[in-house]
Length: 324
Figure 1 (cartoon, rainbow, N blue to C red):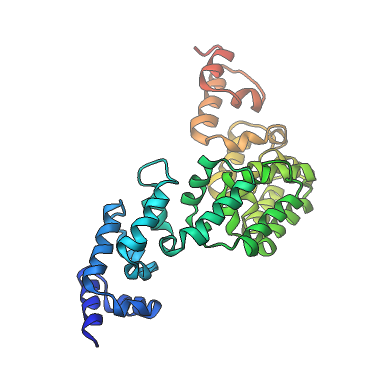
Figure 2: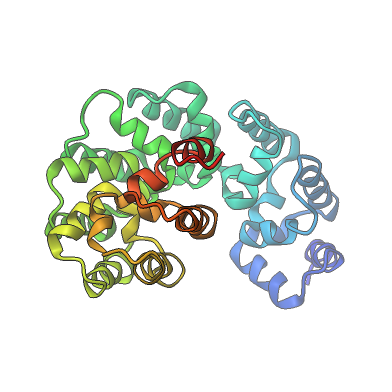
């Protein structure tokens, strides 16, 4: 083992890495063998100085050991300074690097600038661009032609081609750009159509709840659909529920849907059909809103629709039912 490699080995051991992790990093990044211990220490100290917590640094370096091979003043500092211009809050850049450390070795000129220009053509405001990239820093690694353009074309194919709409979807959920059109987004759209969503309904899901488009049909959407069927909803009613409140298809059955339906039927003495008229029923907290308001109305022997009971803030609710 050469003295340089020996030096880097000691540097890693000093930082608490075991030999297995060290060898894995050396295998991942051959250039590590030529790194001086001093320059590795400088890079490590710099990452700590910009706000990456000491306890997270070993994980960051394990994911991307190449960071220790980059020139501090030639590459690391300029890249971080450029990323700082995208952020508006302290810790945003440090958090983005911790999520996706590879962002540090992508070229600002070759990757970041074209990416920003691409998003600007979609009508995304400048202040939102940085927010998107720091929230999902992996964006910098995506090819514009090979990946992002395909996502844009898919969304346009759903009918979202009006000015700025596709950009708004991407700002709302930057993670949608990480999914495969053929393996995830299109199958989800086809499933939603198959359960009765209209073209307008599908557009509404994509615009307002893009996270639903990203979920796996067989692992998440289909089981939720089957649960709603078992709970007594007809297929047409489920289509109405999903159109009214799309997250119903991605909520946890055990922790969210089941307790609410059980409370509706067993405690409130209502029929499941009532929820079809007010799909937002599934939006509200079980204890904070459903249970407390039901209890208040029950004590006064008052009846009302789910909409009247839930779709207002606490002050309006109290005024409406004379509870002040």
